[in-house]
Every structure is written in structure tokens, then in C-alpha cells.
Image 1: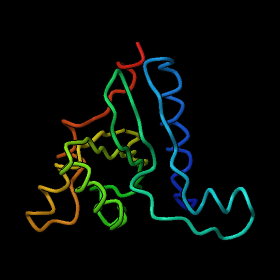
Image 2: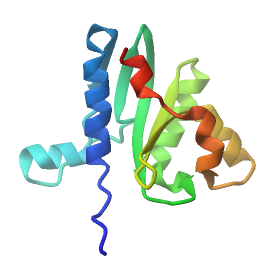
Image 3: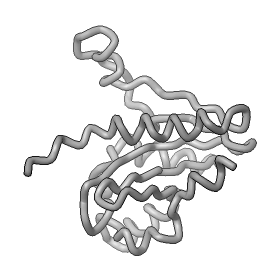
Length: 147
């Protein structure tokens, strides 16, 4: 069986759907990237590197939010994050802001909401990934925020 290429687009669409269902409790702004420019113009577009996919406010708390999806059976690999995103996350945190990586494990159909500080700590230990088991405390139970 050949698996379709993981574009991340279905996970991003689902993320937006969850936030939209929150109504006035949530606001999100999708930051334009090169793929969006290409989709609108039909040509390769050049944009500045975006710090994240979204700027999100939920229940009065604003954060930069990156949405990733993974087919890996064992772990979330940090190589899925671009170096410009990681650099921006460090700067946002340094300035007192919040930066979250929302990860959709496609293999297990589970979502995780990870503060970037967790990724920083794991990287500081010299590791390039974090196992799904280690991510369990960060499972994003989006169903509970929609009630």
C-alpha cells in the first residue's frame, strides 16, 4: 500500500475548524507562507520566513502556533520544524510570549499541544525527537475546550 504524501494541509484545516467552532472565544490569523502565495498566484512566491503558521488567541491568551503532522510511529522528529521557526520560538519565549507546537500524530490520530520550552529542553539533552509516550501529558483534548 502506498501512502499519500503528508502535506499537513488536512491537519491545518482541522485545527482551523476546531478554533472556528469556539466562536468568539477564539481568533486565529494564518500567516502567509510561500505555499499560500503559490496557491493564489500559480507561481512560486517569495515571502519572508514566517515565525509560525498562526497567531492564535483562545480565551484571552495569545500565542504563536505552529501546526505539524507526523506519520512516524515512534516519535515527533524536530527536523519537521524549520530552523527559522525554532529561532522565532526562542525569541518569542525570550520576550515573554507563548509559542506552541500543535502536533497531529497521523498514525494514532492524536493531537498534542507542546510549549516550545519542552522542545528546547529535549534538544538541550542532545535529542532530535520526543516519543509519543513522552508527549502524553501534552495531549490536546480539543473536545473539552469546545464545550
